[in-house]
Image 1 (tube, rainbow, N blue to C red):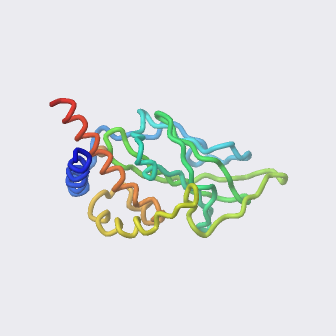
Image 2 (cartoon, rainbow, N blue to C red):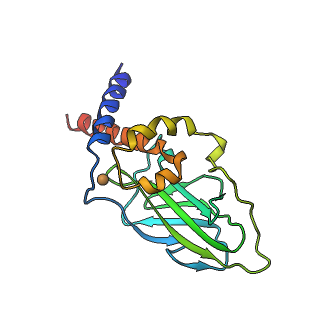
Image 3 (cartoon, protein in one colour):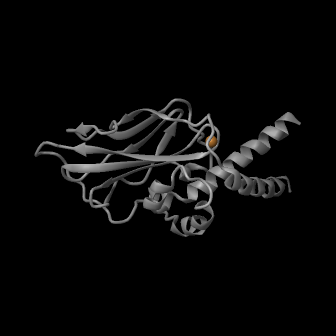
Length: 198
Ligand SMILES: [Cu+2]
């Protein structure tokens, strides 16, 4: 009964968050990354890494709101779709195809509970003995579980809300579910704070 009450109020609050989403001063911003924006890398690192100015809001259940997605100039995807979040840094196993230009798209949950996304380009100029991974036409889902249905359901409501990540979100539709996940997370956090304060 308690759980159900919390869930219902969380859904109501999530709708409110979606309806009133607006830029705030407390958004995390990227302070370090591998690769750096515009960098030309000659060696494949073990993992991609994104560090922001303060901890990301990683909670049980909102893993789907975090993403590091690498695509090449033809739009093919590289990597397994998995992301590991630790404090102010998230990482993903690195893989690339042949030499060329690549784009890295990020999505994360800011300290204030909002989902942020951005993307930047980098170049890859490996030696002739580099390992070449075949790109995938479809975005990889960590562990192989697809979230396409959820993403499609969320797409309609998200277009009127958060504009911060629209460019990335239209290109990477499989992470759309993260918006709802993070909104619900923010609502649950708010509900827990209310309970704690009462
Ligand atoms: Cu915010």
